Length: 416
Image 1: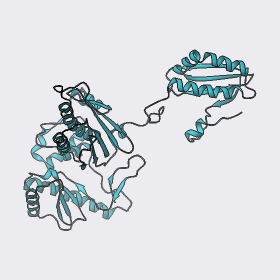
Image 2 (image 1 turned 90 degrees about the vertical axis):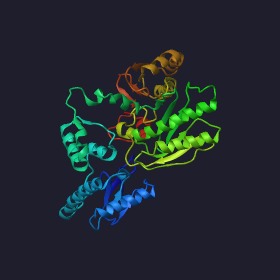
Image 3 (image 1 turned 180 degrees about the vertical axis):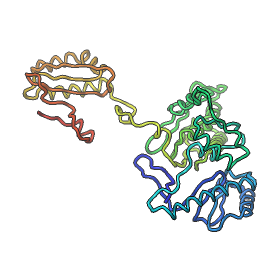
Image 4 (image 1 turned 30 degrees about the vertical axis):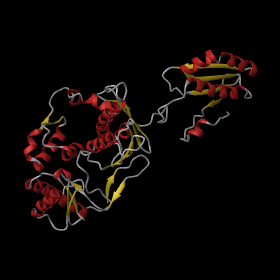
């Protein structure tokens, strides 16, 4: 059994009995027993040429192979080297299957650096810099075995300055966490990731092209299409993606934006499917989701807003606080009500609701003490009722040792 897709959120991982082990140019599939070519290679002459070359290599019987898109324009020697690497790896895996008692892990994908080199390295990359000695040795060994003529392109970073800082990668990493991404011509795209889909909106901003609205929209959409494809790769966004482009009237401009979008995602390793642009200027697409997106991997929901990206205003917190104070003030045996809130809420209570607080004290005969605190969650609201001796009679919300639902934690009173 092989895990082919990681668990995402509440969804568990996807498993398969069809084992596959990827190499640089080939994918080994023990149960396939034939030679296939990636569906992304659409040219029939290329497909035929690759099949002919691979048959000449005389692959072992009983094991199937698929030639990856990276195998295009590769010669017989390069494919032979990748074949030997995968066959040797499969021999190790097969021995483990026979010797280890299940259930047990028999094979795990290579480390991130080796996978990156294997899947993205091309001949136009002049240098690979690694700053961790063990990873450097593993990556160098992989290059020497699979792509020996490029082995001298891997370098070890020996300087004292951090690698990411030296090459200003921290700035680029910060950009891929931003919701709004500026475009060179003055517009921007806004990316909203939800549970159901990813929504991307294209804004023209202050850009105007020769006082022609149609020309402005067309040029901005072309630029946005390329940036959207780049952001999808960088953030590893998958599932259903809805792109809201600026409205265009001319059909030739619509078709050109569609083509620009398809051309931009052509280099993406994840499978994508793009529909035609709608009458509302929307392009719907799907992108293969293999692992959690960068956002899900790096961030977790804020404990204050519970992932809503919003908190209640001081005005709304004041209304809630006044209701609770009224309930507490008229409770039997209560002489004082202490209210603990954030500074902004306290200021609003003591200034704009000063008259209401005075009326509540007069009507109930209790003393109300409001205390504001800095550096606390905006939605903080704690009400403590005290008897004549100053002892706590009840606390809201209830502090319970066991974890319960938000409704139970925040919606119950506890008498003492």
